[in-house]
Length: 88
Image (cartoon, rainbow, N blue to C red):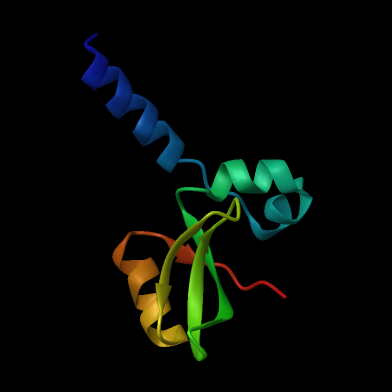
């Protein structure tokens, strides 16, 4: 099996893992970050140059983008094939 075929098989297997809401509630912070880093993003309000904006973060907390408002932030997240997580 070539490296590309092996990578494709691993990627397909990762995409097949779907956790229920109950499963997600049981994840530790580290497990949550590992599961969602490439699939889940969240948004936080920030102030940049005295203007309100939205910072977009991967599940592990890494900032991956910014947007002027929540609607455009969500659109950017969806455009990249990720889901938006609601955090409190």
